[in-house]
Length: 175
Image (cartoon, rainbow, N blue to C red; front, top):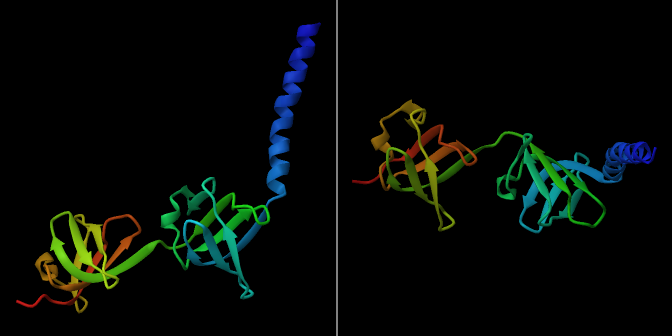
């Protein structure tokens, strides 16, 4: 009889645990807006009514982009995001959605079969992967890869963290 009582108690606790977790999540606020800025300490959203809200972030904040868990660095201004939070506490989660295609501009430092390295206007460098699907264009027309040799000014379209889809040569390198 004692064994049966123990089984019933364990079963009752197992059934109650999800209900307690669901109740805890129900108490969290959800604010939605367009990401204005984001850094390791906070995210700033602009709601549809124009109000701007800042939410603190912490090491336990989970970040999702289009349903996939990502790092905070992948959240960019312009994405639509929902911040799940409990008042002034660091956000529990950021759930962002939107187009993740970015354009990086700069001067080509090097070009290989698998990557292009750009010097950016801010003084840094960025390396972008290339693959067999990467297309090169000059004034809207297809050109050979060599048009983007070192010294050329280019605009590279690519998914954040992915291989370039298009390299637009804005100005050829001087000879």
